[in-house]
Image (tube, rainbow, N blue to C red):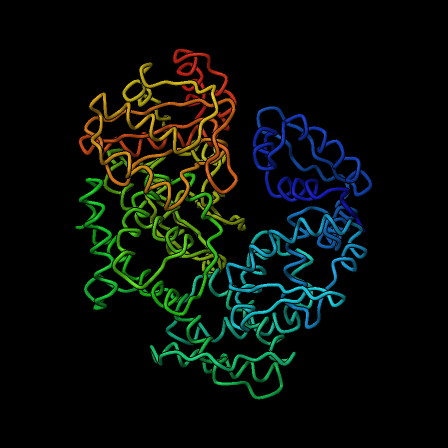
Length: 639
């Protein structure tokens, strides 16, 4: 059985098995230098030599898998699923292992025993426990310690299941061979029959779930079977009757759990299944068919707020309104019953869709003052995708469209809209003729479109396939560009909104509050903003940090409050604390006026590019505005 000496080699092996990649793209994916990639390839080839294969470098295309002995290589693939050691080696792995242990153990745990088992010191695990406690606190779970007995998890059964299923779903999405998915955290023997039963049940009903939602429900059911069999049933959960179609599915699913457990289960189990199905349901509803006052009022409030404060008029967009209404109907169910759906793309959404994120966050934060509902960042992130698509659709158009494309997507409606917006913004010539799920694509015998764009690896039929992640890498977009032949956008925004007068290098220690007061006072004296701008910048920062990533921060006001648009560029070699343990070295304070609202998204795109290109260190080395501008133009010209 092959064992890779470290996990990065396993990821490298997986990536290069699937496609040919240049070392620059591999370096970005693995977050290492190209020199490290070359060293890893050498180490990988030494292992693969005994399996009759190697990765060879082809100039112009990258590293490609070469198989000299198919029989030997097939043996490598068969054992590859068992390549990861069951002992956690890194801090993130230990945190996940600790979470699983506490969530599934019926007895107290001692760190000394776990330290001996995992060959680490007790002090190392004590450091890991800080993040474990923080993660559990999000679910209102806590760990109590008793001398001589150890530590034990306490909390409601509902939240224990939610935390456990969320973690398993996250691990399943990252790597389906993760050893934690084979632990006693769920009933492994129930997964296959549950999967078959779920497919059949949903195909016979009018209820539609995304592939992602269906997989989550399957994992939850496997966890539920394990918990019920272990003497931990749900007994105190109640829910409204709701849609009869949903109840029909939940009753049949509860009966299947009963047969798998082998004993009666409480009515609360079926009620919670009903709520989970309703919360993840896809509702194909026309705008004229929706009559929910709460949903309508929230959509109206969000769209009118965006129009009033940002000058983006999306109120007449029927598609956006329909998408928001269908999403919010299930969102309110989740919020009402405190069901958390993980949003694995949240970090990317905040980083790659900052304009849409800020517009949506401002609208939701304002609405939240008048409602008992509290939306999590995950839920806000899902709304951002819809708002972002609306902004893209109305404020970044104007090219002819030619190539016909089929989009294959294995996730939800919001992700599909996001991918469509990404590719149509970059390559507006593309016409997406139809969107199909992975399972529906596999059933097709022939594809009429020019090519297929998929967010997961799929078999190629009679037309070429381009694989794009939900937030595509530059390499993936370049591959797509070879088919559609479009030009890159030039970084003209630097000339328009950046100037030497508003460029500063801060060498003295300074807090975030001092920085805001200093810069906003200057802008007010110069006549760019009024007195309301400074408190609005502070309020925006208090809602959620404006750290964009890679040491780059983007403070700004709630709404377009400037009289004239300008970008203040601040470089801090010492760094400025920016909340949540982060430090900002390159800060762009935005003052945007309503007269320049159409350019606002393009301004944000500049900073997104700086983050993508990891330009912070280069920008920080600027000695003056001239050198900053030269470095910025060079960074932007790479896209």
